Image (cartoon, rainbow, N blue to C red; front, side, top):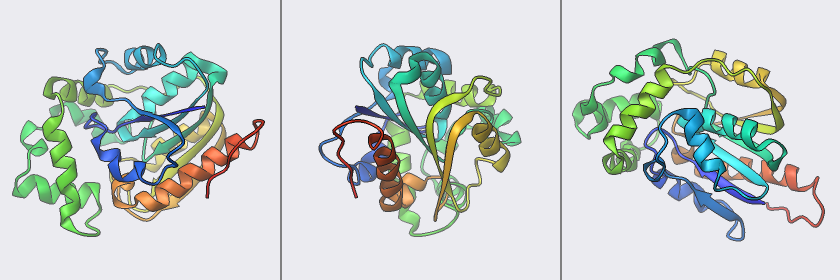
Length: 235
């Protein structure tokens, strides 16, 4: 079974560095960067990624990528064996997200205001302020036109309709200022099997608490593997 990781708004996949250290080395793992994907809409991004998947898959979707994971579930059907949503969403994450396409570009560059805002909103002002550094480094590497396109995608998101048939684990930060409880409830309502795991931290939970996230992901993987023949489980 292949494991794929879908990144957050930055789209590069570089922010998965610490999380990847918590995943077993023998997993068949691929990170998809949106900078290397031609499609820009949610559905077309999912279609393009689906053409690269030829076997059963376990999906880890961070923040922005929740809707891509959802669309992959519809496209691939039973080939998707499970999904872990990391502080993610399949509908608008909040009422304010309608304005996402109007976010000024200077907030994606490191300065006094943007660093403070990201530390407060993205990390809930917890831990070292240096946590914001990798985020700005990743945003600096991102294709700016595609980054703006992803912001427009978030602003125009509509509610999901079809169900997700595979087991779903939702990793919920203790303080997420970007994804509302309403958005999580909507996602849960579309899942036939839904498990919520609360982990201490802010929205950038995979970066602020990769050890706990790694354990939750391994647990979700083990639950799926236990249903398949000749499986390996990971502590």
